[in-house]
Length: 283
Image (cartoon, one colour):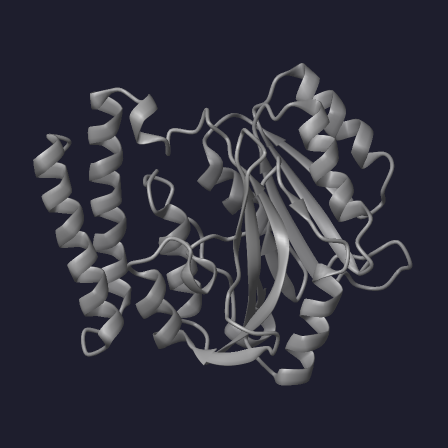
C-alpha cells in the first residue's frame, strides 16, 4: 500500500485517465477529489500523452496535494491509461473517475464505511448526467432511501441489456474491495465500445454481494465530442464501433456462466446489436 501524508497506508486508490482535458474542467474534477472528507487515499492521474497545457495543470495540482501521483505516458488510449493506473494502485479499495466529472465530497468516506459495515465486496451509487445545455438527468441505483445488497448475477443480468439501470456498466460510480475480490481485472485494450461494461461485468464476477446505495454522488458531464454520439461520426467509424461492441459482448459471453440468466440476456443483446448493424449498414 502507498504511504499517505501521515505515514500510514492509503486505503483507497482513485484512478483518473487524462487526455487533453481543458484545464478548467480538469481543475474542477481533481479538486472535487482534493476536498473529499475521506483523506486516506491516493489519487493516480494518468496523463495519456496530453499537450503542454494539460500537463502543466496536472503538475500544478499535484504540487498542492500529497495524495496526488501523476504518471505521464505516450498516448495509447483510455483503456491503456486506466490499466496503468490499476497497476500502480496500492490501496485496498479501487475506484475510477473521468477527468471532466465531479464527485460529491462525502462520497468515498460513506461508501467505505458502509462497505466495512455490510461486508459487501463492492458498492455502486447513483449519478446524474449534465447535457451541454445544462439539462440534468438523474440515475439512482435503486428506489427509496435504504441501501440494499444484491447478487452479482442479478446486477450482471440487468446491466447486460441496460446502460443506466443498477448504476450501468460504468467504472466511475463503483468502489471495489480488492482485499475481498482479489486483483483487479485490466481493461480490454483493443475494444473501444462497451469496454467499460465488459470490465464492470468481469469485476462483478469476482463478487458475492454488492452494496446498492441510494445517493447520487457522481456528476457526469456530457461530452459531445465523444465518438459515442453515433450521429456525429462517419460510417467507417460507426462500423468500427459496431464491430467493437460485438467483440465486447463476445468477451462478456465468455465470462458469464452459460447456465445463468445473465448469459441469455447478454446473448439477446448481442443479437440485437447484429440486427441493428444490418439495418443501419454498419456491420
